[in-house]
Image (cartoon, rainbow, N blue to C red; front, side, top):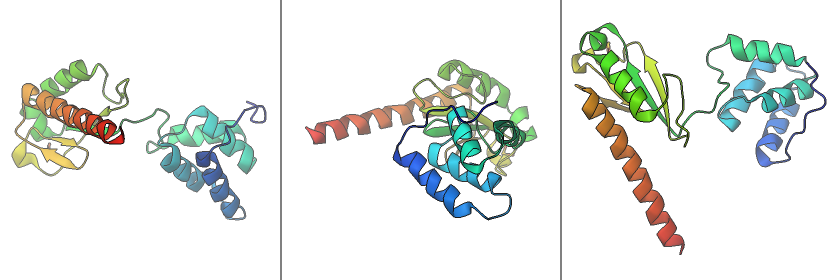
Length: 176
Ligand code: FES
């Protein structure tokens, strides 16, 4: 793979990453740190960003891609503004978590790991939040929601979306 031919937009995100890379030169093995920072800046690591990192650090793109795909904390796809994290641990599983996840997949139109087309939600799963007494449990960003069933879970998501739409409408009104 050839890293040189890629067009890189001249914008603040790339400038910030470039500054970080320049400051990291001379540090042994900066690749993972640089990729962490890139993910913080961009939210994920699209191929274009990987090309940029490869070129700037003068390492083969295949090496960058290998690191990004090896560690599961690096993301190749964009994530939504809000993370829906359904617990699939034993207690939640016994209380019907898989029915809830199926209902959420249907509601959002994505599979686990996917992000909705409007980038509002990313659907994810976890293995126990330590709140088993509330099973089945879902975390929406930092908020824990327990004793759920498919209808309640869908309702929570719809309410958050409705609140966001209201807030956006109020903002537009204020701007006028
Ligand atoms: S198993 Fe779901 S919170 Fe513990």
